[in-house]
Length: 262
Image (cartoon, rainbow, N blue to C red):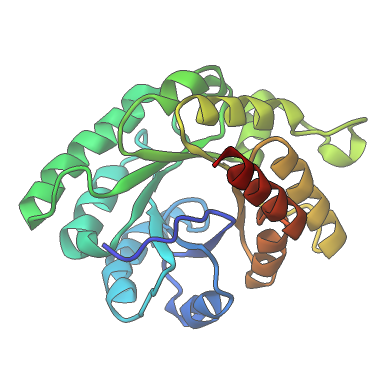
């Protein structure tokens, strides 16, 4: 396992079949890098991308950056090979396995059980690799609280806004909504994560490339209890760090409380 960064402010997602962008990704110093085998790839790219992940992992120095990868959902034909193939080769380097389109707690438990066997086969302690669950359907939103309690491997819940909007038939998007468009699902996931002692991570912001709108989205998410955000551009990493880090006033207040208590 790498020296996983305990922070989750920035989680930089990159396609799992493009090693040319790894250096730029690492250069932006994200808290976590997410190698993706799911939505960023066409169906005919998934198997070859999976085969590239071990060499990508071994050819780079990840330092304190948390290394994660996203498998395909458990309702697809790819997921179990996504787990077995990658973990069998580089499981000792993977910190977190991300499961997309989680529907219920049994999805988490199925992946965790498979991980138990693969970890034993490669000689690492079962439970060493953490799991993050993406909540991005109406069914998952209904089950968020039970999903959060599904496994001791879980370390975070991640909101997937695009697929969630499709799931509930949301047609017009945030620009035509009189309020915070994602308030309800974000608040529900934050509540579920907090109840289980997990991190809450917001999904990517792809509605605009402007820094002000990205920052506003991050501020709203932090206000709802989120610890960080999935980002899709290295340029967004430092902005995410600015928002999801405590400011000097917060640090000073926390220190004064600790000192007074002592």
